[in-house]
Image (cartoon, rainbow, N blue to C red; front, side):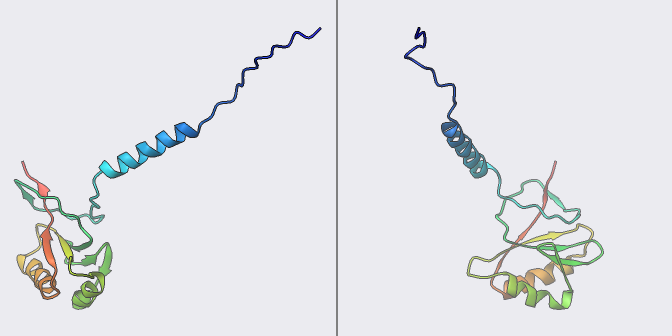
Length: 130
């Protein structure tokens, strides 16, 4: 006796459309997330009432004990200009300064002068104020 049905139901599940949706969501969240890379060094930044977000490519950090870092890499002050010239390239060079608020202004001005001599735009990182 042949009691088998002619209409068999396939119990397999195709996940190809689900992976497409997951990839689209991943791309959406990657594009809408902020592209700011915070400085990984512990620096107590000064605060301002209004803070503008700048896309940072090159970051110069001066810690409270006057150590210099370019993109989280330690640099001696005497080699700062050479290392900055090597780090920045092109006409759209933007240098973001992360300077501890206890550091005297002369060190900030020194780094800003080096950046200006390299035809780079200078931005000072601050934390939002109250």
